Image (tube, rainbow, N blue to C red; front, side, top):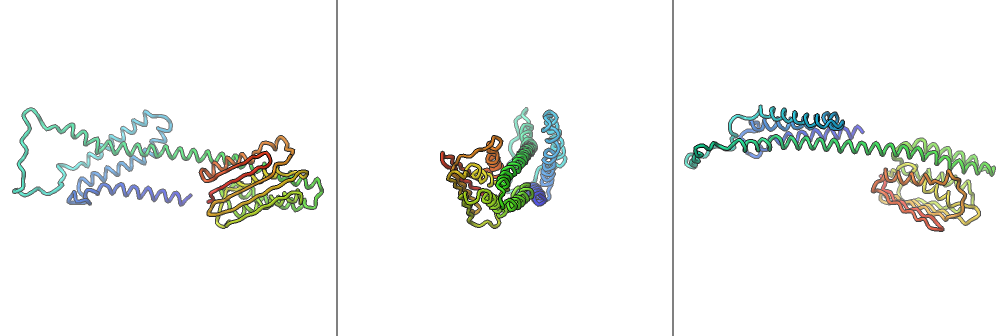
Length: 354
């Protein structure tokens, strides 16, 4: 966060210096005999005022007047700014014509143009008016409009960011109770059977809950930890169902230096166990995770079996929340395909990892 702020300050400083340097371009191009001539001084003051107007409009006038819908006061303030800008730059207007080049020798001097007819004075007022518009109003309006659009864009981005953060917080708050409910059901089944595996299951659950409590608050976690969490969950299910459940789990590819959103994969695996396990039917679950070139590929397959699911556990909140989280965390960086057939269920998910 601090590095981003320093980078922004540096970009603004470089932008201001580059903009001020524009005042001296005519001198560098040989259009003036001196670098610090009156015309360059006037342009320098003009550009410095435009920078001040940009930040004044961006940080003060737009938030205080435009965003509070006091549009009349906003446009009046802009008009006052223009008058101040025009008056100040006129104070630095050099006297007399600008010396573009030395006068030609007398032998090359051209005859003076004939004077205008009587009754027709020099028509300079309209010409000077358009020069004034071009030299003052146009750059002023460009700066004001750009600062206004930039401020509106930044406000919209901030609003979208706050919306995403609030939605993610809400979704995470739903994930943890959902996970705890499903896992406690598994341990409850072991306790009813008075299985010797019950203490081991409690130990695994405590380790998994420790991961949930410590890592789910983070935006991204190390991929190794997420895979280990999934492995513990599958081992817990194996303890519960024993040899009656044919389940295969494989991981391939390089997991080093990869990060992923926490608890983004487990809902699809939970769903496979919830709908694909029945001791009286032929069950099968296959889970494959591969990582190649920062692309994670998850495949979850399960045969459909007859399973009694209570009403409160029927909503499929885990999968729906995960779809929403994928849209928020990996926009245009993931592809989810779900194939719901009469006899089996397949999930294919590809994520571009950070």
